[in-house]
Length: 310
Image (cartoon, rainbow, N blue to C red):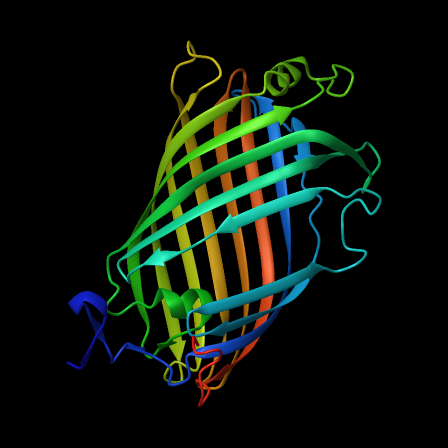
C-alpha cells in the first residue's frame, strides 16, 4: 500500500489522498447567509419572539501564497433584509492543527438585530442589543489517513478514492446578551423581556459526534462531500448563581461539491445548524444557514522571494 509521510511522522495513504503540485491559489467567491434567534416558552413548539441578523449577499476574493492569506469581501448592494438600517456583525476565527487534531478559536458579535414586523418582509431595527460570544472548537478525526478534510471543505487536496471518517467536536464557550436601554414597550412578551433586560451571560460546553464522506469521481476531479453532526451539552448562567445547570442540544449539516482540477476548481457549498438552549424561563433557539459559490486557480511559487520573506 502506497503511503506518503506527513508532519510528525504521520502517514497518509497516497492511494486515497494526493497533494497538488501548485499549493498557492486565488479564489473568487459569493454567497449569502441567514441568522435567526428565537425565544419561546419552555415545552412549547409554537413560534415565539424572533430576531434576525441584517445579513446580506456578499462577494469577495481570497489570495493564499505560502503562509500568507489575504481575504476581502463586500456586501452586495440591495440584498440586506432592511435597506435603511446599518447593523454590524463581526466574526474572527483561526484554525491550527494536524490531520487528526484541529483547534479553532473564534469570536463573534452581533451589534443590533431586526424584529420581523406584522407585514411580510418588514422589519423594525433593534439597535441597542448585542450578542457576544467567544470560545474554541476542538476537532478529532478517526480516519485522516484516507479521508481528506481539506478536499471536503476547500478543495485544497485531491480525494482520489471515496472515503469517510467519524469525528468529534468539543466546544467550550462564553456568551452574553447585552440590552443597553431596556424598554418594556419594545418586547410585548413579558418573560422574554425579563430575560433580555437582565443582560444574561453564560458559559457552556458542548460535544458533537459526526461523520463526513467524500464521494470521489474521475480519480478525484469531481467530489461531493456531505458532513453531519449532532450532540449536546450544558450551560451555567453566570449572572444568576442560584440557577441550575441547563441542557443544550445542537445539530449541523454541511455539503459541498464541484470540480477539483489540478489548475482550476469550482464548488458550491451549503450549511445548516441549529442550537437550542434554556435560559431563565425561555428556550433560545439559534438557526444559521449559508450558501456560497467559490471558483479558484492554483499557481506555483515565484522564482524570487517577495521582500525576502515569501
